[in-house]
Length: 134
Figure 1 (cartoon, rainbow, N blue to C red):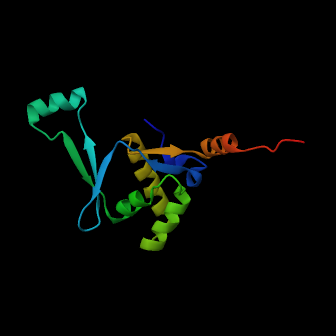
Figure 2: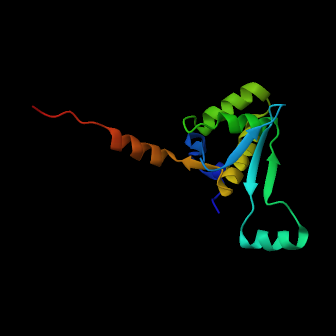
Figure 3: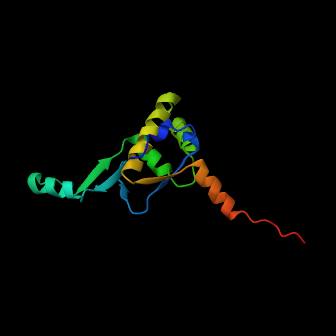
């Protein structure tokens, strides 16, 4: 599993992006519902005995729903945190701690990918065009 995102020194510079293969929806009240398919061997065996669902529905709270909707592959964790703080207020330390835990859980369940500052820097270097000396 991925180390806690909130414990990295560059945590606020990380850029989360939604994984394209995960399903989610917004209900009529604006709450995000994530769908987690549980079809691994252990889950299939457990379902055979308990009859549990193959598709787990996870309803996010108001803060989680807004954070999820703000994840676009462009905004950094710091920018998302500022927008959450503006919307909900509250103490900054607890907000960023909660955001770090939330992003770690999303990453561990493969709902998001994380671009670190090093990844962003390498991508920017690949795109740079150097002028020809004439």
